[in-house]
Length: 135
Image (tube, rainbow, N blue to C red; front, side):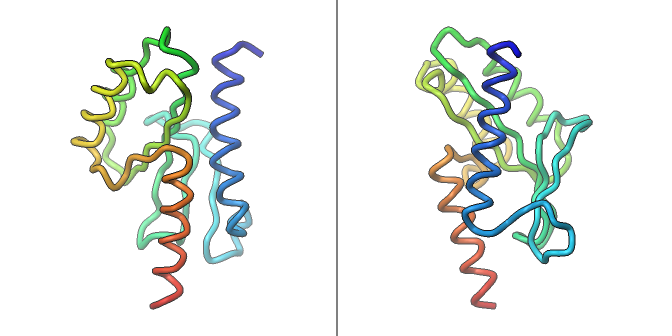
């Protein structure tokens, strides 16, 4: 497996691990669950059901180092999306100036409240569960 594939699997697994910490799994019989997207025109990796009022797609991005050059591709993909999406990023490459600009653009496209690093994503999941519980 090449480095890009390993990084992709790492971040998707990291997102699934966060969900698992809150007892969210792939069992469709549960009120809240996720499903993996193997062929998605928007290049998303997961969809979370039941956590929000609508299913929400998850797009992940891992930039291992500042040598990465894919930032603009994420902006383009997210700009054309029609579904509700959250964007989760990780890796040292996100400190690179061009990636910081890409994050700024992504925030404008899908909203700052839909863009997270892994820690922020975990906080978001926890908040959504607490919000759901209080209804």
